[in-house]
Image (cartoon, rainbow, N blue to C red; front, side, top):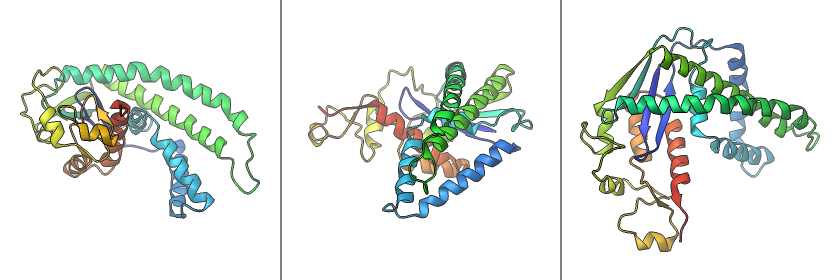
Length: 271
């Protein structure tokens, strides 16, 4: 099993798990069938009611915190019974202690969070089951709430498995020098504690829709482009190259989602 740590800005990282030797449980098989049926709705034109519901549902799922998706990617102990070790892959310029600190903090906050919201979602199931929009249309509030129950359940168990791997030291942190080259820095640098500026590198990698502004770019202000307090260090194109390099099919979509969420949260509103 591989866990990727991808710095998006100096202070925010994307996380992605690429599992191996996973044995699907009955629950995950059912979830896979439901996901396949849902994905078929993408073929409907957006002008139809199915197409509109699919587009709205996808927009709701894109708002779910990327950390929840990361924890869901980690197999539970039942699914990952054959997983004896995790390779945590990060740029070589990030200290191993920083990686462990980040993962420990994530586990410590997310296990109680998902436990709490799983219970709340369960309590809401009887309420949403009463919703009936139109007789020929399924009860989408109920199905979405059911999805949230499963999502919190899966994230909680993923977090507990990650916690177990950390506590038993069943991991190896791999400082990848090849990964570091996407940041335009030497492998000996430090991302969080460095006093050297990454402004020029970030400006060179500014992305569509967001502006890594240097010297208060007045044009960006006047055009209403969001300004980042902490500029993005990698672009979507960089992420696509990383996915090919690591040969991880789900890497690109997961890290791009995380990148867009991080940028959206850190963007300054136009003045």
